[in-house]
Image (cartoon, rainbow, N blue to C red; front, top):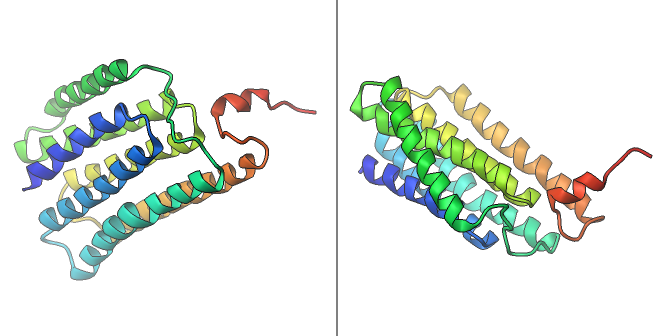
Length: 210
């Protein structure tokens, strides 16, 4: 069952790499939250009940419900267009994300010899690099935030790859980083929305000292 969750997560990375609509991004992020919930529930057997409940709530509540709804609110609040507006065409993105997954597979084989943990490294590294690719190739600030969330999901999977025992401090750090990034970006998008109707990183080139 764990392999099913990880393979499905990898498929979502390919899909998010060629997505053209904000709503598609939000739905994929919510789906990834569900997959991480199932992965955590299936994998984490040797941790305390309190820690397990915290991780499960973190995945199903914040990653699946709160964050997607918050991003959707930002889009409606700032009247952002539904198009993602990538720099590269979909076919190029499909090829690049596929190459990222293949390169992550080759790299993971050199890091760990255990077949159980290799697939974790493959999916985690694929998520990290795909998130960075989204940040680089998307114009809108809100879409770059979604790319950062994909990176954060990769960090979460990477923490599962090193073993089933995840200290509460690590989970708290991930959750705090998650909240700070979303809230700071949300404030930034709301403020810049008062000046620019379309929060696009290209507009930042127009900023200069007085």
